[in-house]
Length: 262
Image (cartoon, rainbow, N blue to C red; front, side, top):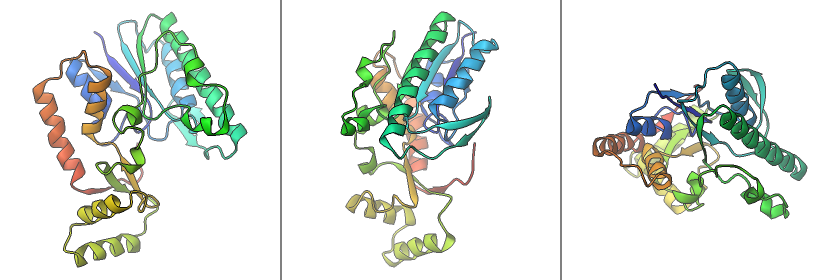
């Protein structure tokens, strides 16, 4: 039986429904979600290479990969574990990371195609846009693939303005102290507002104000919208759309504190 097998980072697997769960329900396929928070493209490619080599991936499977931004690189420990490394700080490092990402994607496609496995590549963010600031010569459009990478979620859902969106889910980073959170709660109470409403009010005024201690992330509805835009040929079931809308309401109406998770 065909399976939907997905790879990527936290945009692929999170504590609420992301694109793999939604797509699997709509296609009525069993899902194996191999997304991992913080996964870089080298680790994602490594997992796919191993899953092809050991026979886990079969020709009747549907493989979807959401590639991360090229600045995220991991030290690979084994098939299921990695260590996060610091983002590139110099142009030369960024250039090398970008070139490596292109190589990972090309080699992943080659192996999947060679194994007669259906695949589709997606991205949360454009893979090469910021290197244009450095007059980078290697453009994404020059990388030869048999099947194009789908437009990024940032491009077609957020119009390339993700960090200015005001309808994202909100959660505190692990580094936020109890005293800082209490300060925010006190300010909210002084205005007779819930904590989440106070933060959204402030974000509306200055989208970057809370970025140093809050994390903003796409909601289930953003993931559904992304799928609807990249797969316009699919019929989306009303019950599924209603389910995602209800989950989205729950996600949007509280502040999350995730701690460490996998």
